[in-house]
Length: 133
Image 1 (cartoon, rainbow, N blue to C red):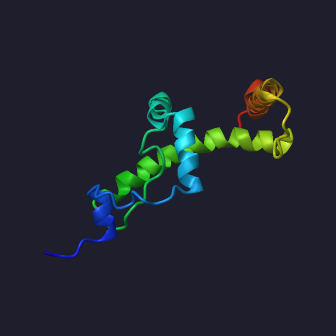
Image 2 (cartoon, rainbow, N blue to C red):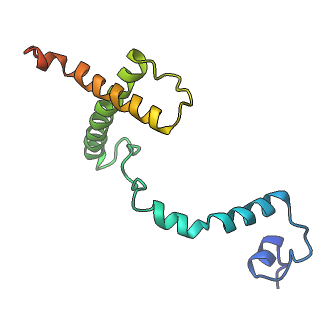
């Protein structure tokens, strides 16, 4: 028979830590669990949480699927670049690089107006009949 490690004793529920004094972290986590149950919170967040494979994956050189993986990553990057470009315009031109605490309604209104103006600014070529490169 091999000697049991501390981790094995804790996993076997051998009451290894029954005499241990709870730390501040343990007390904090117990209090937070009573205030906001973790399982219930996960159930609420899960439908809105981003699914796996939405970010670029590492491409291994020389693999059989290297070209397909590069094409998938490129498609994801094109979409992300279009979305992030609008936020870059908002940050540069309309001063959203440092956001102050103004209240949720004021910040939301300001951001909606700024994003609307950014979309108009980015579409200025099409609005004036010019084609952007």
